[in-house]
Amino acid sequence: MGRIILRLDRVMADRKMSLNELSEKVGVANVNLSKLKNGRISAIRFSTLIAICEALNCQPGDLLEYEPGAADDPAAPDTPELVAPGSPELAAPDGGAAFPPPGTIRSEKNALSGM
Image 1 (cartoon, rainbow, N blue to C red):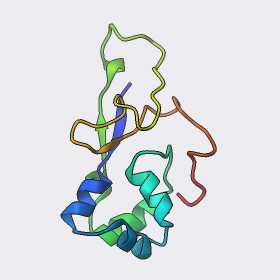
Image 2: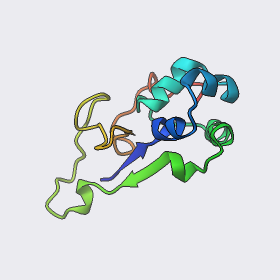
Image 3: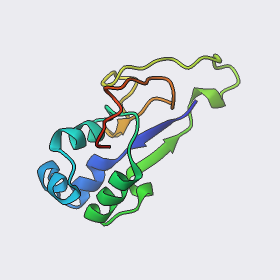
Image 4: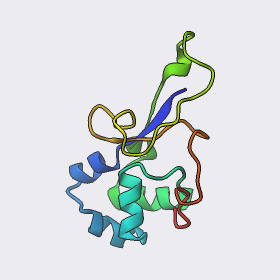
């Protein structure tokens, strides 16, 4: 199964915008944006995504990337492997935050109420 890689840190760096500045423009707490930037969430509200795109003058596709995964390999097992946030398996090759496949990790702590 594939995964979504978040490129928020790259887009912020390209725009020379700090997390604090983005937080003020978007109206989302700094800690929640930090979790988003580091891939420690499992969902994001479209309204938050729209506000981030407006603040960074970008498209959602600039922030999100789909990476095909092991499920595309016929030899891969049927059950997805759980990957903990911050583990090396979860890190994207270029340092971006990567998300596990949908439905593999879900907890109320990760589903931020403001996101």
